[in-house]
View 1: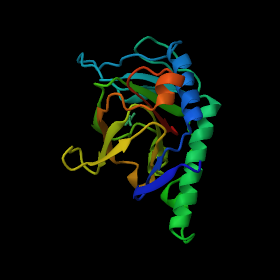
View 2: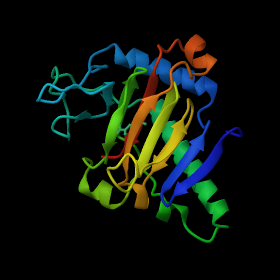
View 3: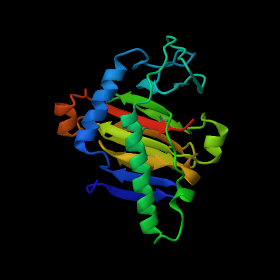
Length: 232
Ligand code: AKG
């Protein structure tokens, strides 16, 4: 995508601004809506103490349960099996990793193997989060994948659609020390290798910041859709 702009945020962490084209964004939103209203679709997860997450969630490929922080074939909420991972989505993930590799290679003047900094990954799990304008997600690490996936630093690939998020990341679970970036509709964020274990979260969603193709063509309700892909 010629409009895409890549930023190297830290070793193993790349932000691809406007990587998903408007038509691709519309396609992904429609796909998530179709899957989201069916079996294993969106629900509001809760912890066993009764607290609820400030977002709605759907898993593809395998279920991830926020309360037990573990993966499974069905979800405890209603016993549903998550929908399969659509091939269309896998394709975008692979293109994004490849674009990051090209970018890292150019940047390092071809001296280093970009896959050493950011390993290749073929996703078998996607967590889809929908944040309304009051939605947020506290600083956390993604550490429930298989040990071998984590040890290899296989990246998390994240797609942002709809309203803009303020995204926090850093080495500590400390909001004041965290770096802040804006994730806008069409942005892809990748963190793997040395950055696989960063703390990250969403502090706020900017109301009415979604582009027109999202609100008018895809008819996304106010809020933000985020897809994070991983290899279990
Ligand atoms: C997660 O699902 O683990 C996230 O951190 C999502 C982050 C985001 O919504 O950008």
